[in-house]
Amino acid sequence: VQLQASGGGSVQPGGSLRLSCAASGTIFSIGAMTWYRQAPGKQRELVATITNDGSTAYADSVKGRFTISRTNAKNTMYLQMNSLKPEDTAVYFCNGDAIRTSGRILTDVWGLGTQVTVSS
Image 1 (cartoon, rainbow, N blue to C red):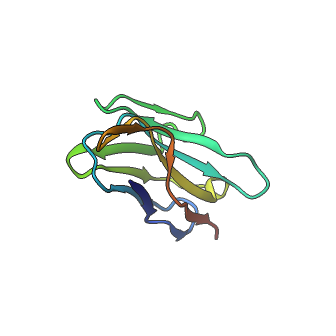
Image 2: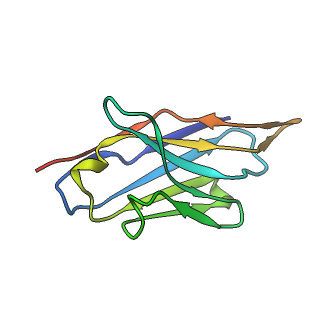
Image 3: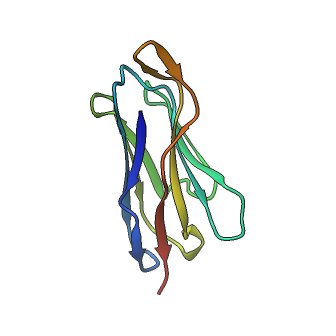
């Protein structure tokens, strides 16, 4: 099982980006899926999380600007980021928990990150 984040890039302040995180492999279900980010010189922080049944939670810094969603049938999670600010610049990582695969349940699975740069 692997997670792959994509959709990062460079954008001006006020712009938008949509990140995707696709899980591949033999997967029967995924529990919570979460976006984290890590800016240079800072600790990794939780951005948004979504449960299997669609319940969501956000960091205060992104509430009202970011929207997390998922498509269970495609084992894919998204992060729509609007009104981007320079302080959103970071590497964004996706995480999956309670991944039911053949014969076992995987916890705390990380994907490689995707860079988001917000600059004028």
